[in-house]
Length: 215
Image (cartoon, rainbow, N blue to C red; front, side):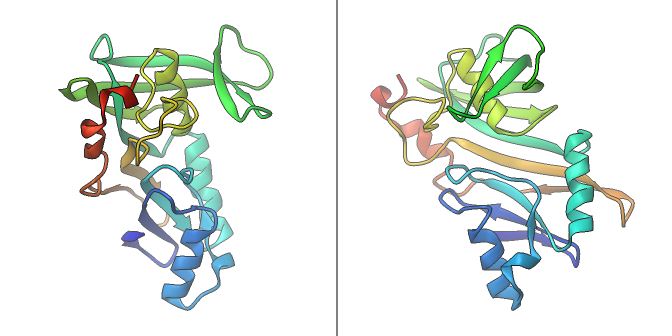
C-alpha cells in the first residue's frame, strides 16, 4: 500500500494486487496512524486480484458524500488494461445493458431493460500494441471497474489475467490498473484528481506472457 494523498477526512491509496480493500487496507492505515480499523470506510472498491487507486473515508458523512458522487457519475475513473488482440475500432465507446447474476457472481450483457439490469458505458483508446497484446486506456462513464472486464470479454477481448472473464490460465497479475481518480471535494469546493504510475512489474509484464496464456 502506498499513500497518494491524505487529509483529515479521507485518504487516497495505491492498492497492490493481493491486498483486500475491505480488510487489509483499513487495518494497515489504522496501524500507521494508531487508530482502529473500524474508523475507515472504503469508498471506491477494487477486488483482491486488482491493483489501483482507492479512497478511504474517515467518517460516515464523508463516505456518504463520495459514494453519492459515484452514483451521480461525478467521480471519474481512468484505467489501463491489457487485452489479447486489438479492439476494432481502436477508440470509441462501449454501451451495454448488464445483468448481474448473484449466484454465479458474474455480469452478462442483455438485450432489454428489466429488473437487475443496469446501463454501462465507457470510452476507450488503444495506447500501444505489442503483439499479441494491446494496452488500452479506459474511462468509465457509469458504474464500476468490473464492468470493464465484462464488456471487453463480451467483445472477445478478455483482460489478461482476469480469472472471471479472462483466459483460463491466470497470469501473475490482473492487467487492470486505475490510473486516475477525480472527484469533487465539497469541503474545499474544488475538483481533486489523483494519479499513480503502475508498479514496475505491472501491467507491463503482461506483454511478456507466453502466447498460450492469452488464447
